[in-house]
Image (cartoon, rainbow, N blue to C red; front, side):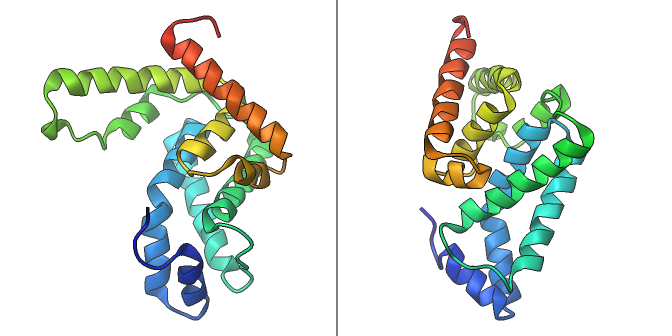
Length: 187
């Protein structure tokens, strides 16, 4: 649960010129949005570029933004559109590189955990990253939108421009396939 003003209140305040409101929105959404982009693109430099582009779109859209749903849904729809633009120009995203997975693991608080627990978590995360790379693009995106963006099935459908049942199927297949891959079953 978030504390403080809602995202929509923050956007309204930002539209009125309150830069502190934008900073609060940015702090609230930067980490999950960045992880989503990193895991979709598999490249730190590309993820950073799209990340900056998404936030520039937020800044440029502040006057036109209308709360029709959750801000996070709109934010991830912007991210999805920027990813699709990038894919059209550069082709399919690459698999999540080892360097990218290592960077994503840097926020694991190793000082607070015994070494064997930290190592187990790191190995589990590496298996998950490898499994994510094996998913079809649409399934990986649906899974990451739910996990990183905390979007509902309806919000995933809206963000990706597909029907609710398609989003639900993509998510269901992604979860099933990840369980099979990470659990050692056949995908």
